[in-house]
Length: 135
Image (cartoon, rainbow, N blue to C red):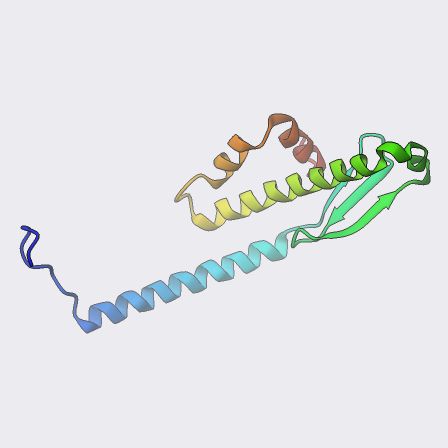
């Protein structure tokens, strides 16, 4: 069956193998770059505005520490929400770091960081930047 464009060119085995080798090299380079960038990622620590609650995430985005100053216990009714807010802030900062890493990995093929920034509320982005020391 023809689509009107004439016979399709079929690559020979050598061309196919060369393309597969090139794809493997590119994948290995991307993986090496990912491992390098991931090794450079730092822990993220977010602290509540009053300084009474802190949350630290490791380079994989996992919560590794939650610190609650004893003075925060005076506000038991709102303590849970306050802790969740600081966890959310730490996660937002981690997301910013990950979007920057993805941007570096894709070589400018598409704007990951721009997409991330577009959908992150400005006040959350501002807090994430402060958490990352970029104010």
